[in-house]
Image (cartoon, rainbow, N blue to C red; front, side, top):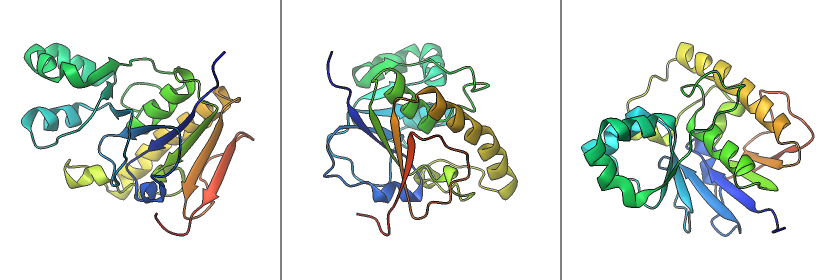
Length: 204
């Protein structure tokens, strides 16, 4: 049996800046992260809105892509576009755990971590830029190129949907170690023994 890999997932929150490009292991990104990630294996894409921006040319995502349920539907509705994107689409990954009510609640970070735990069978998953686990500040680098509702009411709705998925995912993959990087350790969910927090004072 091959050794289980170490995976680094760079999300879109402010704390993505805590990622150190010198680390070893598989590297996945979500949409377009706010930091340079050399040697990234693939970028996860889950939203219609992101696909629309890509189709219009207002957003360019380099490298290979792993696309979720809604991007798969988008490609099926736009076969010519699908053909143009085909060289970059590494795969469509539509698996979703039962504890995620729908693919809308199952965000890009969820999908990347779930894929790393389930399909890549990672022994460690290092998570950067997953700020919704620590705060109500859901500012994302995607806000620079995609219009998003960042009102307090909408942020509360989002974290109420997102956080229980994390709790269940960490429990499901109990033999995987999840390491979260943030500027403080005041996590907003209950965690199991396989979850660690690394407090980082400043970005690399």
